[in-house]
Length: 181
Image (cartoon, rainbow, N blue to C red; front, side, top):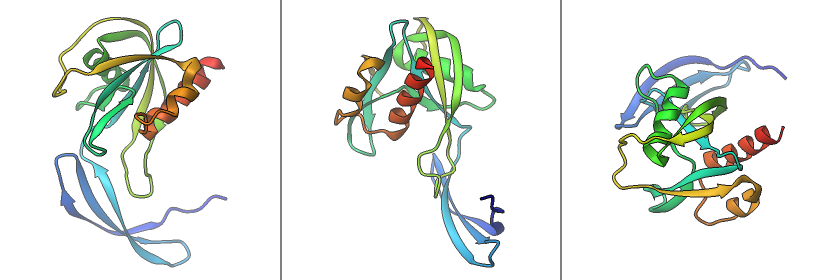
């Protein structure tokens, strides 16, 4: 069933931070219903999440501090895109900074959202293959631990208590299915 998008009657910024803007949208739906939605609007230039996969189907994960859960989480490397930066260039830069590798072959597999009901942010998934050692200085406050993990043990990986980030979990399944196809 195809529906017309609601008509935006008004829009205003109600709060801002370094990373996000909170926006109110006054909407009118095609049936005449009117309501106000709040959404988080990213203040950056987009983001990437990267699956650096070695020839033996080993993905290079990172363990880093997550302020939202106040613990160390395991997941795929990810980061914000810089102004004017191409998705694939951003992905390669991030894995150089976070895992100490770059990829000769980069494939954009699509975009992921976390909570599209109230968050406008998208993260582009990139598969990085034909890896080679290459480092770049990043913006992390501490060195990240690189954790190699076989995609053939994905069920065991997603059952871990320290891998809860939805984008990483969805991306790992997408990459495994892409490589299996």
